Image (cartoon, rainbow, N blue to C red; front, side, top):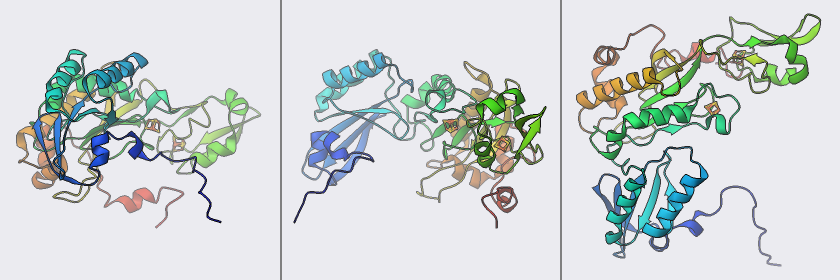
Length: 356
Ligand code: SF4
Ligand code: SF4
């Protein structure tokens, strides 16, 4: 018997039900697109239909009032639909060119900058942080807000040599990704163990299994079951903290921030690249992280002044070479920086999971 298949109740829903009707009508059938001004995309379909997309930046982690305000703007000034980009910019679509200017005016009046397209500094991607995750060493969204406040002009203009993707990660091992410039949490000391709490709070086998370099062993301390860390092996990753909060690794003095440069997923013009460490030991200094912002801006504006048109940061560094990069950005160079994976055999062989 030919029966209907039962619906699959997991995974993402089919996005077609949420698309703007004009996008749905012309799905896969677009002729060209251009950008009439920073923050606005204009798509023309083979059918002759046209649609304008207005992109705006937000403060990233949003309260319900802000979400409602954005929805009201969509209802009153756009066609009632929004979508988010991979860097969490919000986009409003309108099928009538006359709606573009009032929509931009309303967004700007409400405090949402319009931009983030083409050769701009788009919104900074950040990891989930304290809102969803149990191991953040810093407030990724706060660092992003502080930095984007300073890069506002670069968001609303398209004056960079090529697009610039920035990211912030609040630990150094899990989510986060490749970016032209990345801010990454960096613990510099192994965890301190509160032995009185381990037996009450932790499942010791889970903690032992969690360590990527097998540095944790069960131990008896003062007659109670606890743990010990082989500090020569520990890479200060912080992975042991979630299954065992008494393994304290966040520290106001020793938890720092590092800057990585030159990652990209795109394979336009040159192949995708891994980013490399160029500055470390910067203070984790909320609420504005001025030391981190200063290094990021120094790298960014050196790139802006020195790169050729269409060079991404990785392409620029490839052309001038790492010694010139450190000279031009005036960052101190040490032997611990820019590990380029030629040494990956030694690095990865420190792992219990990968051997080659
Ligand atoms: S980067 Fe690390 S701490 Fe931050 S949200 Fe991802 S897993 Fe959690
Ligand atoms: S910080 Fe990372 S490497 Fe060090 S003991 Fe914990 S899990 Fe292992």
